[in-house]
Image (cartoon, rainbow over all chains, first blue to last red; front, side, top):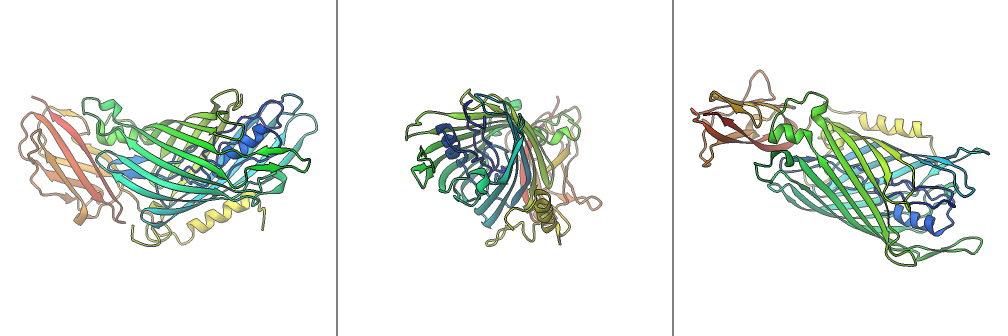
Amino acid sequence: MHPSAFRRAIPALRPHHRLAWQSAFSCVCSVFFCLRTEAILLTCASVLVVGADAAAHGFAGQRFFPATLVTDDPFVADEMSLPTITLVPNPASDGSPSTVEYDVSVDISKRITTNLDIEISSTWQNIKTTGPGNSSVTGFANLDVGSKYLLLVNAPHEFLLSVGVDAEIGGTGSSSLGVDHFSTISPGLFFGKGLGDLPRNLPLLRPFAVTGVLSMDFPTQNKTTSDSGDVEWNPHVLGTGLAIEYSIPYLQASVMDLGIPKPFNRMIPLVEFNFQTPVDRGQRGLTTGIICPGIIWSTTYFQIGFEALIPANPRTGHNVGAIGQLHFYLDDMFPHTIGKPLFGGR
Amino acid sequence: MRNPSVPSYATLLLVLSWAGAPPAVAHAFLDHAAPRVGSTVSQAPSELALSFTQNLEPAFSSVEVFDEKGVKVDKGDVQVDPNDGALLRVSLNPLPPGTYKVVWHVVSVDTHPTEGDFTFQVAP
């Protein structure tokens, strides 16, 4: 789950908007706060991109893929991210006060069969104004639910392919956050590829792996009209995510044992990229995105991950945020009970 | 309850998750090997030993060793060490200098399967 989910680029809010960023984070996390401008609208759509995908850890042959934090990965698994915490500071601009946004998310993924799961994700948000006239807005973002089906696993080539769909259910979040009252459906295609099948004379490249996602947001309303009569268009949004990982465990167990001691021998440095590109309704090509370097430490029953959240362009924002996640492998913790598929064995 | 506090929410989920948990077991990862993964040894080993992170199911755990031509060079006497359920051993035929590939498939005692391969070299 890992991803737990978040996979949304933090859309950038322009200076005159009250938030400089929107969380790109957790599945459910969306920050529908003070929705007014097209940038916010963009944010709203973007935030839905991969919906409730709880990111998963998984295997393809001898390749172990950890659960990534910001992009969804292609696995179907029993797992839980609890908590995922994100922090995004937003500077004051154009008369808007500076704010600090905290998100706390939980993502749960449960296998129905060996290759099919359901996912649910919820995010609690707190947005504090740090300038004069301090204020705070708190509540839950809209609920995200989803499902994923693992289409293909090629063990020798460490390759996986899956399809999934997520839905942000409009109106299920706190009104204080100004959540959307329409839903957004986001089908996606997911893949994972380890480079362990490279020639043996390229040993130091073999621990590399990539996972990725391509998705499209379909809002159930093409526009939203505010009480004041302002119309905001809800575009379709193309979501692209990529995670590039270097697995120290793979290096040690499958390429060359360098004697790297604990805890470093279980670390997986990675960089994630998450971009959102509206494709219509007056916002075509207004891409936002984040680049997230970090590290995951994976052990037998859980993993811990930390990443920086760096805006990829000025449209996305200017401040660096952070994300941290504790992620449990339920299939390893409870292999005979909640950690196995409801139908069809392991 | 629409908006439980985060601490209570998290605590509840954690308690529910851990309640009634059986003794945890998990996927068995290769922790280390002798000869070491990717190493070059000056003397041909008479045995290969693989140490995993979890105890193994002997009936479903195996390891084979092949030379550069794909000829099997182990003696086929694979066994889980009776004193260490996470240690898999197999005896080797006399190995001339060359590169050898180790291929293993194991199942941890809770039936999680894992697999892997690596090479080591015997120096001339």
